[in-house]
Image (tube, rainbow, N blue to C red; front, side, top):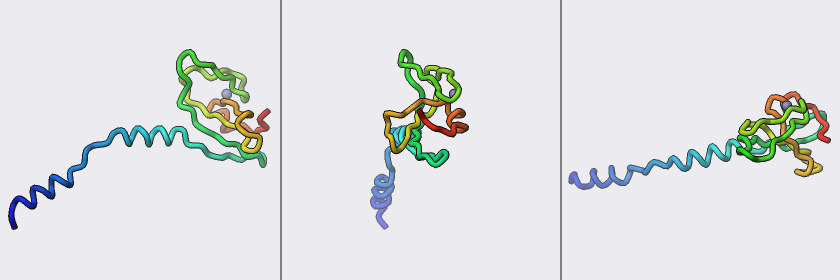
Length: 102
Ligand SMILES: [Zn+2]
């Protein structure tokens, strides 16, 4: 066996590191939309990693306390009536929220 072959094969196997792919995956995972049914009503639910400084703050319709800037929370809307019904909830509040979404 000529030594040159082994060297070339080993060189081809080496793949460049792709940290960008991990970042993208994280982004997709954090914004993943799911459907949750509460009392027979389907809600589309999406995780929000947190609004930026200076952006609008949201009042959680479950506890009526505002969601502070940069707080990870969820946005949910009536899957039938559409995104116009969307409201921002504290993650824990949405877990105990039973609807309806006004
Ligand atoms: Zn709340």
